[in-house]
Image: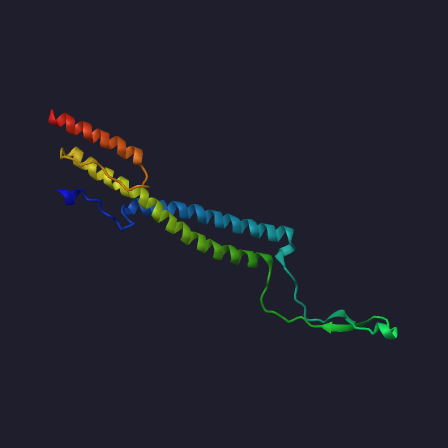
Length: 178
């Protein structure tokens, strides 16, 4: 009898698969909608405000710059600037703000989606466990069997509901004995 009342530890985090998967999907859909909205807003912003979103335009023709040459001030030489041609490399890909921002948003979104998945599994576990115990006890109660008090772990959700149901179980057992 003592072993039956011992506290059992659960290591399974998927207790009510249907509920927990639905919980995960709802959070994920909300998050994915936010990512799509963010990407759409960034695309619109870069196309309208920044003329196609170009960060810089690569050129094949030389750019003339002036390079300052050190002058010997003791001899009275003035500062000299020498003209130089600089050639920028020719790239095959287009680099713009949207491609930079969207790749960052996608990578961060994947990380956040993984974190949300883990969070929703743990959070739904704290709800699914008590619901599972409550359902099992209510089935026994409906079948007329003796029902032990419902026990849930510290930190689980629905503590107040379990307390109320335990009170109902205590009154049902007391009424049955009379």
